[in-house]
Image (cartoon, rainbow, N blue to C red):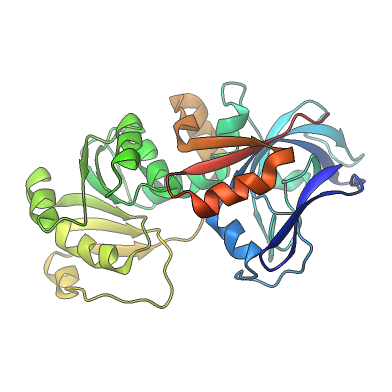
Length: 324
């Protein structure tokens, strides 16, 4: 079978390797759509948060069709459409365990969730990043149509927050300098786009929110944006930090946390909310396909990674396969 493998730092190759054989409690899957995340690029460069070894097959954002099940598998059968979680105990699927960027791959039944018929393969492969955005709205405590939210950053996670919050009836403002990404945010339910790099951004945000947003989501991972969230938050606002940054710093008016009685929290991933996320997608009918800006066949997978690394206009790049 064909599989994309990371062979060593900054070296990848589309290889012919043996098709995997399943154990009694395992499921053989045929990849249908696989997304590329910037954490995959870190993996290719030789960096990741837990140990791993080359060669490794990436791919932790995916949808797939069940081809075969082991005799101890009871809830799935051939032909089922599934998606799968990527953090499995101490292991990370697509990082420390080879992932879905191949014609066929193996997973345990307990990692998998059935994909509703009204959710496409493409949207299914967006469940993993969307679950992070959805989880952020859950952690915002009682988020509903009474809220006005500012979302910093229109990357895949920030756009997922926009979609989830708007579907819950929230008035959403996106803080994003890219005009193209701002347009996607509007398509997903944002009401207004503000450029956070402009000198009058704080004044404009306070004006648009009548003195400050009730909820702030920081999804850019930029320290200066994290600092600015305190300034555009309203009294007793809830602040949820999703964007990742380790080591950089920015000046911040930390006294605003006390004087505004702000609730500030950080979140990691989407623990425990995959079934809820999938039900939410199915029942709202959200079309996440707008996030996918380019699609490549598995045979062209190296070009897909080049697009992610070199074309800043890309939001989410997918790789598809029709193996059976």
